[in-house]
Length: 380
Image (tube, rainbow, N blue to C red):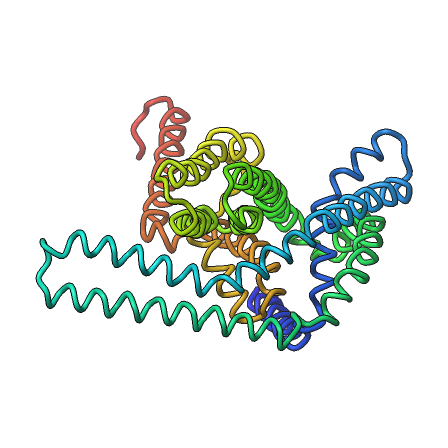
């Protein structure tokens, strides 16, 4: 047992080290794997309709590509235009927002000590200056690095190819890996893998669909309300909803901040805020119960930690791998905890006491049967 545990730990360390070394080239392959996992149920449904696996894979891949290309053609020009305008006008927005804060402070000046007021004004100026510097630095990194144009090109070209071949051979890959399992522990491993699949299906497929629907709702609703850059803010908020609570908070802060600068009427600001409150109500009462339900089994704090840790260690590849690894670790921890709670390490001497009671009862039964055999006569 110790040798097997050592073998698997060494294998895990080698895997993580390989991912760390190859993280700069793994993005299209990891993305293709994630998309294939997301689309595999559709291929299975088409197979149930008597289509071959190759035909089902081709059809699903083509539909996915057409939807993706159409979305890019429709959204990307508008997104680029809005992002460029937002970055260009961000200094004006920051100054306008700072001016509104100062106006609010001026209303409260009579109720606040002058020294406290001076400290607040200095902090507001410092924070706005740091925010502008951060935006300028982020813009500089984007322009200077071009967001790794070669990686982006490989993502657009290689990912569909990887997705197609993984989708086509998905069942064969699963069967091959199943044949590699150690025979003694194969059933236990299969049970844990099914639990991991259930968890991932609930989170990636369910939560991913929730994010797409929320992003579309936020983008459309904010644009209809008339918020500048509502499309960008809505899509960002929907995408970040993959991280529990983060997307809604960031989207609410960004949109309300822009609304304060853009609108002079409090009603318009309230309408922008109402969009996010409505989105949260729809997510909590309709989308998440229907699409995710109770299948996830991943605590939000654990997901957030996994995403941040994966991003810090492996970049965007780590972010993509974070949730699957978090699901695997969570299932393994629950399994080991269950084994521990059933072991003598948890019960202590209780197991030995139960064994002793069982032996005593067995001896008593044996003695009783011996007395019956002697017909009640006393033993000499």
